[in-house]
Image (cartoon, rainbow, N blue to C red; front, side, top):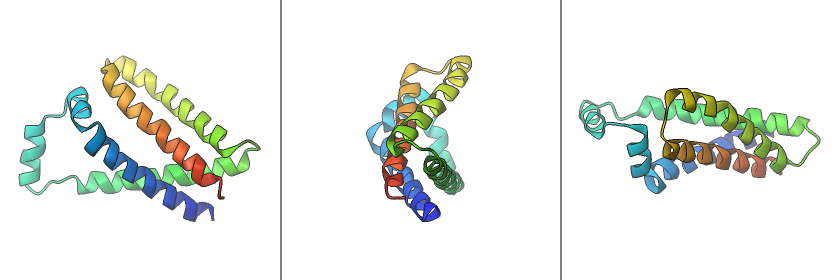
Length: 129
């Protein structure tokens, strides 16, 4: 059941990422991350449309969800508390990288709030495990 729910949670997190970065925060994220849209468009014309990156991201989301649900099931706490705590730990671990990379606060807020939302979604799904 953990594997099945992890796959479902990973797919949902991936879909949230599509909305998060492709619709809700697209322009702000592009600006804050420094992505050159001319390069993206040139790559797209050459047939490089990001399929490999999308498949890797999907795989990472699924593995993260499966592992998170596995750990949540081993803890004697509420799945939402556990997932929220794991999300906070993941965010804190990432912050040091942003500090040294001198990334804009806007990018940090967009990326890390997405991460927390995904962990909470996994926690909600783990309620059924």
